[in-house]
Structures are given as C-alpha cells and as structure tokens.
Length: 90
Image (cartoon, rainbow, N blue to C red; front, side, top):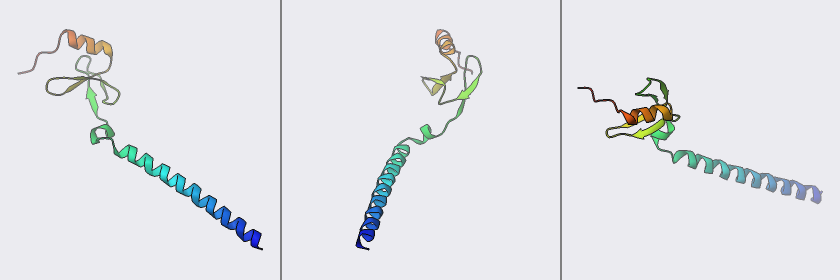
C-alpha cells in the first residue's frame, strides 16, 4: 500500500513539473509578442507610386522618404522611382 502511494506522489510531482515548465514557456512566448510596436502588429494596404499596385505594407519594399515612407511592389519599381521621382502635386 505504501508503494502505491509513493508512486502516486511521484507521478503527481512529475505532472506538476511538466505543467510548470510548459507554463513558463507559454509566458515567455507572450512576452516576445508584446514587445512589438503597434505598427508592427497591424498591416496596412499601401499603393506603389510607380505602377499603382496595392500590397500589404509588411510585404512591400520600403523607402523612407522626406515626409513619410514610400512602399514599392518590386525592386524594379523602386529603381524607376529613384531615377525620376514624381513631382509634388500643387
């Protein structure tokens, strides 16, 4: 009878240790996600100024402009933009 109780206690201890490890891993992954800024958490549709294509800002090629960032669908559009930037509208 004493051996059965000892086995049950050892099993309970092992389960508690596994649960503790899993909970600490889960808390660590939550902390990593919370470190992102709000801009990184959300995605915005942006328009390529060269070809007019809309794309997700996370997938687009970004160029930091004077006023705000400019997004491109490809390196080709970015190169074309840098050769002849559009004139500002009045």
